[in-house]
Image (cartoon, rainbow, N blue to C red):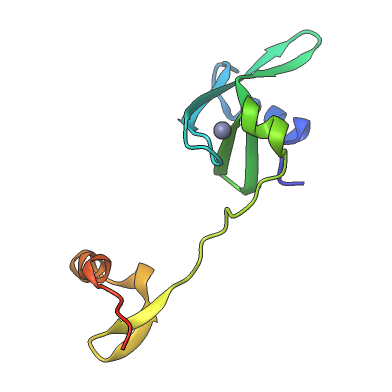
Length: 113
Ligand SMILES: [Zn+2]
């Protein structure tokens, strides 16, 4: 269901001024290896090669290489996780902290009492 539909691909092609080929480059969501997925419109339909493409939320794309798609075609663990922690006396989502405080959060160490 999160996989790209033909209707959505046509919509993306229509948004392109020249109806050019669509190419996505990035890391495979599962194995992290670089992957390039291309969608090329032809007379007999859209040809997709290089891997698979997912859009679980509008304009948020994920790629899978062909090997990982063959192992498991479903997309897992793609949703952001909101992490709350204490900053200057308050519990706030870490994503809303300023850059300096986020750097300080990454430097924090866990320890067992
Ligand atoms: Zn992969």
